[in-house]
Length: 283
Image (cartoon, rainbow, N blue to C red; front, side):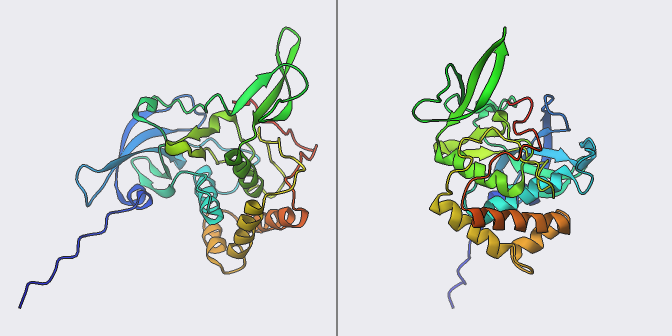
């Protein structure tokens, strides 16, 4: 009889490698307010294969009075799960796992090797300050900003579908800190959002630089994505169960309510006026 054919072992996906690989700390990103460690994660089944990643241990988190429940790491993973359910791939692969300093969030590092100094500033084409009262073609106005010596300039962001998806995502997760430095360009024109530790609050906390579409109709793509979220967030469905492992039941219910409100209005939300609408500092 012929020898049985050997079936090659399946390679781990990036997400599986982040969760199962050997995590080695390479350095610290010191500009962050919480502990953020730059790491590599090596494959247990493919010698030589590794990924660069960010590890944020829970032990390095500073307590936040207005986010007393759960951890920043859990909310970061919850944001990734919502991004995946939308189908837009807005958040880099993110897992919750043990590491050298205990349990924490591990997220795929986005950028080229030249970016490995921790600089994740967005491209200049996404945000700008302009003179005058109008944003100009291809831009959306956010608001006026003081630029020194009694002068103001109009803060604008690009009228870019990638940013528009992020604006919808941020409304769903109730992102309280969408800064310019949290927009990261990846290969092939991909745009990612990072740093989602202050999300999912039961009260309206939305603070963002992406207000340019406020009050405008949602795109058909956004409505379809929100419809998929509605199904996934139904009691007992996969997304609802997974989020229930990461955030409180009240926060899961509030997420359902935000999705329903967006679908009912069919429009991008506008600032409530009850909470500062722009994060500080904005970059």
